[in-house]
Each structure stands twice: as C-alpha cells, then as structure tokens.
Image (cartoon, each protein chain N blue to C red):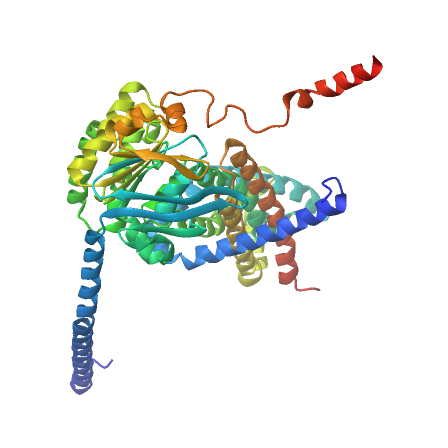
Length: 332
Length: 262
C-alpha cells in the first residue's frame, strides 16, 4: 500500500466501507429471512409443544406396558407382560433374581426394544423414537443403578453437576447452588468434595440418587436400591424414595426383591415370575394374599412355586446309583 | 457340530475373527461420526492428552535416553572399525527418527496408555457407568470414547518425537562426551544426512498411524470387554498383544511403502 498516495488510500477505505456495507446488508437480509422462517415455523412448533403437553398430561398412566414380550437370543425373558404405572405413584416390580425385572426398566428407558408389544412413556412409544427423541425423553427420566454407577473420576459434586453441565447453559453459580440443594436433600452436602471410592455403599447410593434427580425428572427408576445395604441405610434410601417422589411430584418404579422395605413405601406391587405377572395388588392386599407364589415370596419359603432345585435329571440316575442297582440285581 | 474337530474349530475362530473385525470397523465409524462434540469441547480431548500423553512422558523419556545411549555405544564400536566414528550422529538420528522412535514409543504407549484405556473403559462398562450415561441422555461414544481416541492419536506422534529427541541426546552423551567423537562432526553430519521429507515426516506418519491403531484397539477391547474382572483382565492383555503385533506388522508395511529402492 502506498502511504503517501492519499487517493489510493481513500479508494481502499471506500472499498472496505463498501464491503462492510454490503456485509451488513447481507446480515440484515439473513436475519430478516430467518425471522420470516421462524414466524412460519412457530405455529408448527407451538402446535407440537401443545400436543406434547396435552399428550403427557392427558395420559393417566405415565408408563404403560402393553403385552410386551422379550427374549435374549433364544431365552424368553418376558412373555406378554402388561402393567401400568400411574402418575405420582411409587410402583414396585418384584420377583426373584433373573426374572426380567431389570429388563423391564431397560425397555422403559429404551436401552432394549421389545420383540412384541409396546412400551409407552408419557404417551410416546419408546421403540418408535429416533435417537434424538429418545435422548430428549431420557432427560425426563432418572435412574438409580444397583451400585450407584457414580463416575469414578469425578467428585460427588461433579457427579451431580454432570447432567447440568451436559444439558444446560446454567451459570457456574447456579449449578453450584442447585447441586448443593440436591445433595442437601439426600444428606450429603458435607460430602460434596469426596471421591466415589471414599463413600460407603449407602452414601454412594444416595449420591447417585442426588445425581438422578439433578434435572428434576418426571419418572424415576430404581434398580435394586436396597441391595447390599445395612438396615439403617436401607431405611434412609426407602424414605428418600418416598419423600422425593411426593415432594418433587415424580412417578417412581422400584425394581427390587426386598419385600419388607419396599412394602413400607410403595403404592402398588407387581410380582413377576417366569416372564409373567404372577400377582399384583396394594401392599395390604399382598400381605394377606394366599396366592402360593406371593405367600412363598412374602414369607421367604425355600420351596414352592419357585422351586429350590434347578431343573435336573433324576438324582439317583445322575449319581449312577440306578445303574449299580441294576448291575447288583443282575448279579443276584 | 463336533467341538473336537480342528477344521470346525478353525472355521469357527475365522468367522469370529471376521465378525469382530466388522464390529471394530463399525465402532471406528461411530467414533468418527460422533467426534464433533469432542472437537467443539476441546477440553475433553486435552484431558485425554494429559492422561495418555503427559502421564506416559517419564517412561518415554527414560526409555528414549537408554535406547539412544545403547545406540551410541554399539554404533561407535562398529563405525570405529571402518574409521568413520564421526558418522555416529547420522546413525543414531536415522535409526531413531525412521524406526526406533515411532516403533518403540508405540510399543511403550500400547503398554502404558493402551492398557490403561482398556481397563478404564472396561471398568466403566462393568460398573454400569456407560449405561448410566446413556440413561442421562449423554452419548458415551461422544463423551467418553471419541475424546480418548483423539487424545491418543494426538499424543502418539508427540511422544515419538520426544523419544527420538531424548534418544539423540543419549547418543550424543555417549558418543561425544564419553567416547570422544568430534562434536561438530556429530551434529553437522546428522544435519546434512537427515532429510525432512524422507526421514522426519515419514517417522511422524508412522507414529500417527500407530497412535490411531493402538487407541482404536484399546478402546474397542475396553468397550467390548466381558463385564467381569476376568473379562477386563483378558481385554487388557489382548490390547497389549494385538497392538504390539499390529505395530510391528504395520511398521513393515509402511516402511515397504516408504522404501525408495537403490
């Protein structure tokens, strides 16, 4: 650039001004076009949003499982199961180990898809949702895993803040306050800077609970929340499940085989065995039920409809006693 | 099917191998497809560069130094026989930049960082952390796997460069300081003999390829591990063994491609 030549300088200035001017014009055009597009799209978006609200409020049952069958490869786990979870209630799904309870939670969370039947959450068929819609739905769900599943490289505070950082643009101050509120609700405000390996089993479960309710979900799912806990921690977790459900207006599904603790806090119980619902009812109905399966389960009887022995061939035959006897008879 | 029949077993193993290769390819495509988040939130990758790269620095520096010192001793002995001990710098630098730097650094990287990545991801799977993340509507491929992958790919060439650098310094210490090779000849011959395109860039290309392969194997083995203590132990072993074999085989292939004949 020739500094001495004022005319060249001014022409460059002019062209820069012109460029800036046209860029501004272009920007205005784009903004204008985008506004028009927004105006056109807005009614559609509003309609969709309203539909979603109407849909989710109108359905009395937040979770509706209709004639669902599921099998892992050739092993049938669930056979035409139907159950409903009404809004605001705490519902327990009980049954022995390996009866498909956790599979049900995974079907509700969309981690597995049913072979037949449908799983509706808030009126939406989970299996038909694309990845984006499924992730949008999961933001409204919270899940407490059997052993907490806390992120081991993050502190308790960072674990609870994880979802807030991932899904929201909240300020650091806001996240700090919200995390402390959640931790205070589960009694672990003082443990916010501890690492997961420094927590006891009960504390880890409570920290995971605080993390699960971080974004105020509409549905909470608990996978074996009482496993491996001492009686005090069990009571604490049980009370928290009930209190949080009522205070935050949640709906909760509890998968457990701890009958005593869960009957204290739930509104309704489904018993699952061999992939089917064997019994259902309120805790009071369950306590007095004379149904063989429920009786065995409630009174922890060793043998009954759920046999003590895994199916096997005849014992004597397995030990080879029959053959020996036959041989003995032959000799005699 | 007769389980004892060796042909049946061989066929079964071949099919399983092909199937795993297919799964690993799909895994790689998923990583590439979901890498956008990692690059947008670069701090996630920086964190992985720290745990794969920075934490591997000590073993890389110490090994590089010793490899360079051994090269200095061995090279001096051989070169002196032909009266060309001054070419020690060339020998040390070319050996390191072309071959030993990328290959030995990659083997060390596979044992140090690769096994750590497999164990970490495998344990995250075992303790349901990956599932928990999915249930929180956070994609583990984007949040956990992709940043580790790019962290490894970026770290590997840097580590190989540091390995070669410390190796050359080790050779210098032995050759010049201890054995009395001329200082000027050591460096000037090295400068004129080492070509940027043919030696340095080819070495970097090798180490990028090794980084890509090691990190992919480590992540895949961790993600695919049977979620038990034994499963993770097997996966970690497989990572080190498969990566090491892949490094050596790929080194031959890449060198063959880069070879310019007589």
